[in-house]
Every structure is written in C-alpha cells, then in structure tokens.
Image (cartoon, rainbow, N blue to C red; front, top):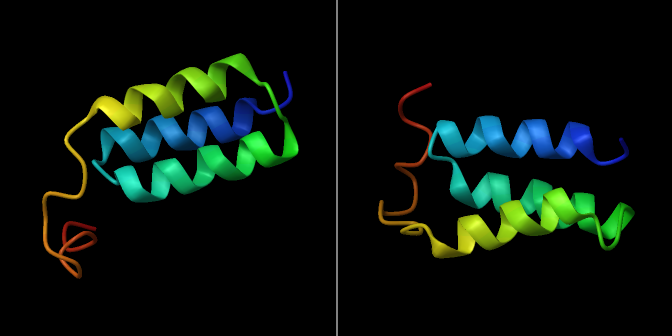
Length: 63
C-alpha cells in the first residue's frame, strides 16, 4: 500500500482543517506515487471544500 502514509497524514490534516497542508502532502504523495487512486480522490475532495477562509497567519492558532 504505497502512498498510504500520505493518505493517513492528509486525512488527519483535513480533520484539523489544515487543508493547505493536506493538499501539499497529497501532491508530494502523487509525485512519488503517480496515479495513486486514493491520493487522487482525496485531492479532488479537498478541491471541493471551502478553501483557506481564514486570513494568513491564523491557520495554526489552535495547536
């Protein structure tokens, strides 16, 4: 299951509403595992979510 670590990390980031970071992880995963169905689907899902609604700098205030 190559790419599954990327998939798990991205899903965790989505739950934390860290969409920009999740997208970066998925793009890196697809770079190393081109055509990976799970990563592609998750990237498509993120593309449909409301994206970056908070101003820059407020992303990581809840850690």
